[in-house]
Length: 165
Image 1 (tube, rainbow, N blue to C red):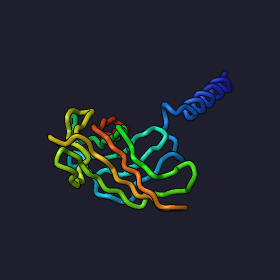
Image 2: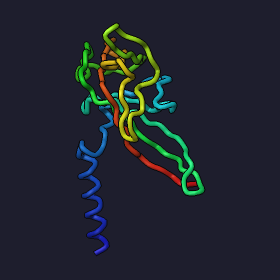
Image 3: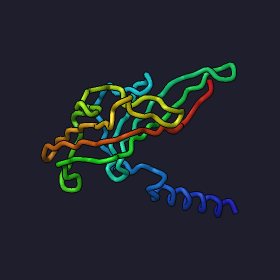
Image 4: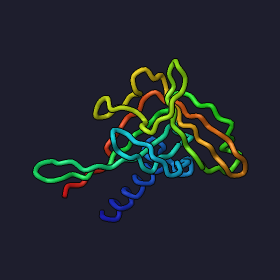
């Protein structure tokens, strides 16, 4: 009976890992070089462009008081792609990201920023007032050089983990 439970657990885990709905496939990720992007005062870490999911993901960490103690929180913010302009051929060349720049776009043109969006609710952020869209301008090098402009209109946050101490 114990053997059957272990076997079913292994099959279940393998099934989850093969499903693209649960895990971000690592070989589709292009990690941002060190940057100073922020969200709601938090520094974003491990930002990456996931080509197959058409999204940018970033992690952020913070602590807060709760029930007489403290909680260390780990959250993820996701920016779904609204459009993309790219001269990169990801399936043909080996590429790595070597620079990233964030710009907001409004009727008057473009403006640079380090803050990706503004807090709207506990699970969503929006662009600053008057801004119609934002883009990450990603420059890649490798077998050849190219640029991708990844546009987004909002971000959504989710809890990854927490720890009481």
